[in-house]
Image (cartoon, rainbow, N blue to C red; front, side, top):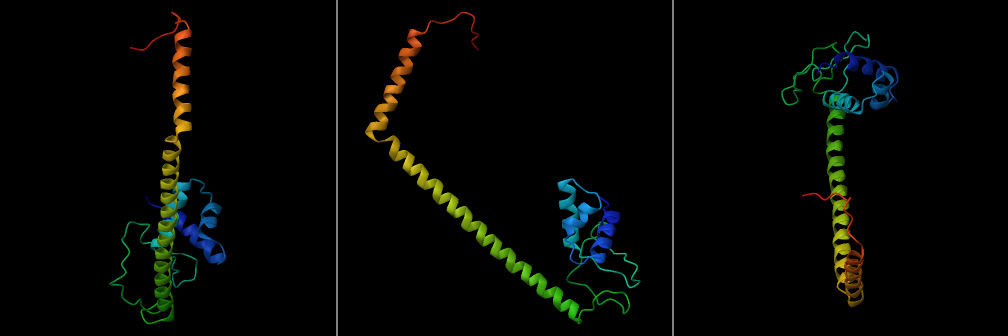
Amino acid sequence: MDDSSQLRRVADLLEADPNLKPTTAIKAIGVSDPSTIRRLREKLKVEPLRSTGGGAGVAEFPAALGAAPQVSDRAPAPAGTGFASAGSSAGLAEASVSALSESETALFAKWCALGLSAVSSTLEAHVALMTDLLRTPQVACALRQQILFNEVAKALCPKRSDIRTFH
């Protein structure tokens, strides 16, 4: 799907206000569908906003136009294009941000695993408790009495002919 015009509008808003978050900028251009917001955010993450040298606020989005992002064989951009060269400090900042996001991703995965482990052990303890509770003589007797009461109630209630039965 070609989202280049929407992504350019989002880029203009983000350039105008650096403190603006991408989701807020996407909503500001009139997008309200959650799946569209998510798709635009993902496209912004895949190919970060890069201004052209003209300074006119126009951004390029190769990923939005269907081109796969090239990370490993990226050559330094010619001078004056606004792109960071391989040896510039912007390239180093970009590398440290990607390393930081990988560590944050690993930390997030560890926290999710810890949460799932806690839920799993809680459910196992609950099942063990309920199994033991149902096997106690008092509960077993109460359940047998309930079944007997239901059988007596069914026997005392006359069958009605106007009730449909499913065959």
